[in-house]
Amino acid sequence: MKSGIAAMLPYPPYFWWETGAMFGQLIDYWYYTGDGQYNQLVVDGIQAQIGEDHDFLPDRWMFDIGNDDQLFWAFTVMSAAELGFPDPKPGQPGWLALAQSVMNQLIRRYDTDAPACRGGLRWQNQVVKAGWNYKNTAANGGMFQLGMRLAKYTGNKTYSDYANKVFDWMLQSPLIEDDFKINDGTDVTKGCVEADHTQWTYNYGIMIGGSAYAYALTNGSAIWKTRLQGFLNHTSQFFPADRNGVMVEICERSQRCDTDQWSFKAYLSRWLAMAAQLAPFTADQISPTLQHNARAAAQTCNAANECGSRWNWDGFDGSSGVGQQMSALGIITANLFPKAQPQLTSDNGGHSEGNSAAGTGPVRKHVKQAVITTADKAGAWIVTLLVSGGLFGGAAWLVTAAGD
Image (cartoon, rainbow, N blue to C red; front, side, top):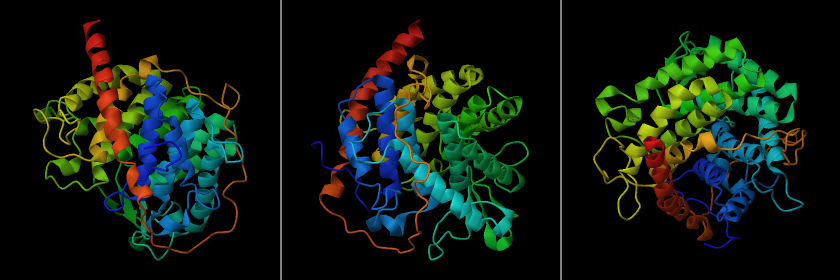
């Protein structure tokens, strides 16, 4: 693949949001390793999906975009701003402006959705979509995290006010229990009084990440320390003793994970590492888990550089795909957090151009089926290649670290 060709994972089986998550993983790869040879591909790929109104609502993918889908692209561009990733070409919106656009859209939708269940953001952003009557952790927790990150980067309290508003609603809803157990979602038609109790790694990753940013933003406040520790304590369920402390997604035990779910480990790994950076009191708990799981993930990769889905297996389990590759790359690069540079802010080295009014234009409410082109199908190999190169460098570092 050459620079200038916009990479997209092939649909089906990969939905639009996972390409955004993939680019976020590649930005993390650059941040932790300093290897920038793929940066222009990432820039081009993101720019190709910002949409006609620079709002991460491209016409051709409108049929596939929910609030959480937009958020994963927003996480990616927010990381680009925070980590000092190369800026887009002149005349294109900055990474910060794109994240602000998504947040402004979510604020407007939150205010519209709030009368149902006295608060909370719906999973979907259009009434015609399945999931309209579901308020979930991915959407609400994602808005919370994005708001805290924008507040930390820009210093604008409006973002943290909304982040706190969403979090407070989650606390009084079935999404977050009193002991900080995180549930997947709740049904609007039933008054948001019952929870889907399914335990997913990425939901914990989202909330741990958001809480770590809140902890840093509030200079280590006791309340955010308690909340962050509460969420962290519940992640032990994903590293069970019967799997030798190796990360397990709930769908693995029955081997019923879908394409999306195979990538979820990547996000918990990413935000555990970020928590250890932003809230150093967590590092002693997080670091051994990341190291142990990086070794487990690495040994599932075969000679063709395909990495398996079940890290507790001895070797490759025969299950491969972009999600599996992202998860392996994510857990290994996450171990490099102790050597990473501090995140940037607008008053401390950050150079991403913002636009506080982005995303406040007229609302478009059409759904259009995508037409897939050959160029769209070109991107999946990048992560496979990076795992092959980045994997062994990361594994070598782990061996060295273990011997220190």
